[in-house]
Length: 175
Image (tube, rainbow, N blue to C red; front, side):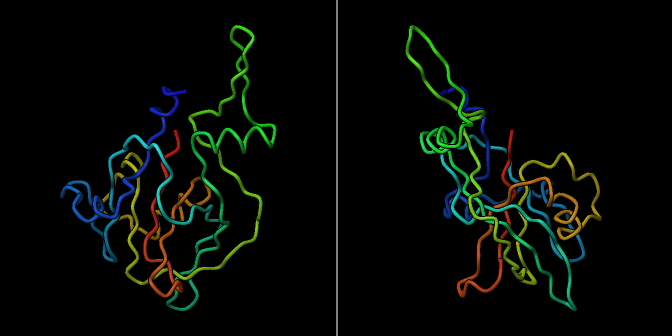
């Protein structure tokens, strides 16, 4: 299982690191509406802070950008194994008569409440992606990137101080 933990990578999770680790100039895709920030894929031992979700839809109403988010729990380590075992999704390994349980890549996504929440994106929202394999042009906007990749990813939302709009969206790397 330690090997599985090393296989899971994600975004940096400390506020201090986010403030001091500025993306290198070549790792920012400049667009007319802002930049897509790229972070290197890093080993991840715990879930990042923020609200994990699936983004089902990205759309515009007037000059307001909205997302339909389905909140999830992103579990790692013992919590992931316990939840997966409870749902019949953990993998048993028997060695010398002892059974141990694990989950692939040491994470498990739990979605017990499929309520869809419509959330407004701040006009200057930050969008952070893990790696940059899919971005090969300087003219893709963060909104177009989000629309293109929303259905296939797990994202971490940070709300503004008033909890009324999404100020940061981070893409969670999944091996």
